[in-house]
Image (cartoon, rainbow, N blue to C red; front, side, top):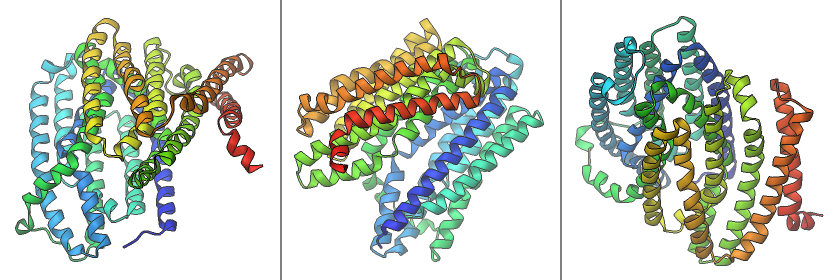
Amino acid sequence: MSVDKKHMMSATLSNYIHLIIKILVSLVLVRIMFLGMPQESYGFWALLWSIFGYSVLLEFGLGVTIQKKSAEYMASNEMHYISALFSTYFVVYFLISLIIASSALFLSTNLELFFVIADTNKLDEYSLTLLIFGLGSAAAFSLGFSVEILRGMHLLKIRNYINTFFVVLNAFLLWQCIVWEQPLYIFALAAVSVQFLNNLSFFIVLKLKVADLKISLNLVNFNDVRSSMKFSLSAYMVMFSNIIIFRTDQIIISAIAGVSFAGVYQIASRVAELFRQFSTQFHESLGTKAAMLNAGDDKTELSNLLIHSNKIISAIATLLFVPAFILIEPLLFLWLELSDKQTVDSAKILLISMYILVVFRSSMVQVLLMNGLHMQLMKVGLIEAFSNIVLSIVLVREYGMIGAAIGTLIPNIVLALFYNIPVSLKYSCTCMKTYIKEYLIPLFISFASTLYIGYLLQDVITPDSILKLFANGMIIVLFFTLLYALLAFKKELRSRF
């Protein structure tokens, strides 16, 4: 069964609508919780999400396999195989959920051994909170594969509608917990209940869409799982390294500096994560196009794609990065009444690190990944993850939470300079001179000029309110857009005219 372009466009539009609603709700919710909770309680809440964010590693990349098989069954009109697929992975995910539940039980009874908690009177409350959060996450995980089948069946709009509803519901319930001054374990109960109902909704939709869906132990086929592991392993290892890089810092900070610091560091990392989400929406199309060109062995077009896609991605990333970097201090103060220098400096360092990742690495990773170099990327990802952990541990002891941000930045810069850029240029047969002339020089001139104008602008319009902050940001964006278009896209503009 084919998916027409109109359907694809509407699905993509629903993705963006969901993303925007999710981010806006998240910004409001973070402000409510950060200002309405004690610092250590908020830090422990952020820590919970970091700890159980690792549960996704236990699926070993099988979600990608489930998507692939569902799409193949739908395309070949073999939907009767969905029952075997569902039954098999229901058992697999249930067994994994038992591991998550056991881990939660162990951590909750030994909490003080792993993390520095200043307020020991809160220890019992935190232990119960972790236990509820862990058991609830395990229950939700057991049905988490249902959404992968929906994605494989191209039911993205329905998925987005469901996710959007539960994002809003989760925010409402947590807000009420703040209003009624509930203990932290009630927050956990609300969050995991919403998470479970979200995944249960996916199962109900799947049951409605596949009328003859059956769940039976007789349909379980572990040989299918074993063969699927070969396909999913490389995707799993890339995901593993990303999880380590983006989630480990808060755990290291909690274990060395204290749980109270994890909350403010999470705020700093949240800014960088929002920047990444907005900057990388182009990557899916880039990877598909790169795979097509590689199949046709068209190195000339692959080189053109690399240069042109880098221009587009760097344009999006830079017009977001410059105002965010310049205005991060007033932004954090107006958003969360935060003026702590360590938090501001950590946010700036993480923004720089994420900018380097997006502009000089992520698009190149898409090209290399879609051209059969996944094993090489996997090794590089593991090296980066290990380096990140070691540097963070060493630097957090010396510099506090700023050390964790520096530990993320250093491997990122080294790999961009000595791996991603040279390997991608070599593979796509792109001349270094062409890369510098057509990409780096226009980007550097536009970036430096916009940064200078942005700092001068603060003397004219002091960003001491949301409206003035927005005005500053829009002027910076407009200036960069015009300058970069003239420098980087002059050939395209000339052909247009």
